[in-house]
Image (tube, rainbow, N blue to C red; front, side):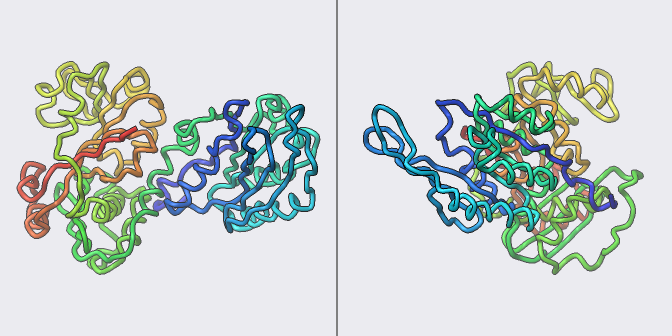
Length: 411
């Protein structure tokens, strides 16, 4: 792995979403696939939908190819009240539809969805070959598994696949917080960087519709090396600069995050004014990752974790047992630059997590990864902010050229 591949996510185990009679016809996988595709991820495979008549009995089962949207009728039913008997399962149609899975494997998609693993698959038919074939290629694979076929599924997959609850949040936990960097990058649209400033405390990237900030790594650290393409950053596409967020070199990662924020933290962003620390006041048990000004007065009783702890604070190694037991976690947005945020989210899958600081990307994309509160900064005076960054200004200095904004997850 190169120095520029820091935040490439770990390999994702295949997953089976266990369904019962109450959840078997919910469009959970179809909705998840559509949501990822809308964000820019490459998703392929097949989803199914059962159609019922006015009497509530099945009429047909239709498969939809995710990449083309083409539909194929796999089975038709009599709709007999005495018994939902199959008039005919079209094996030729199924064979044709499986081409969507083969195309997805050949293209090396980010995710392959294959719905579903049930009675036919336990008999060695249906979509079994396609499910196992996609898994064998190492591509993240997601399928529905009936509760009755669970034992057979576990045996066929050798216990290597994860079992996931039939819930949207559970699917996102499986997808994993390590993919949030790529997700942010995928969302950055067209436009070039007009101005790039790497200052003593902050990095600033100005785009056509917004100005992004990211905290500069500590001086004297390994991240304080020269920027390889300095003097050639302004004028380049924001998406190209945003890709630097994946770098192990902290200054490059900060430039990437600032470019991301130049797109999301737009001048015209509609968001309530608010401070993330005030939003969590009074909640407990509360753990704070990173030191914030006046923290003791604003959040009395909070457990503070710092890499260089002061009296009353905890070292970063304490996060392993303090974070999992916390109902509320507040993290400084600098955890995005040092790539510790995904691991933090993973250790607290059920906690409510707030990301706070000028480096915070103000985009609802992050809510799905477990961040319910996003408190950041929208620059209102790009020239003034650039001057403040170039002259080594602090957060307090930047506030004269920006407004505080906060996004909360409505769910």
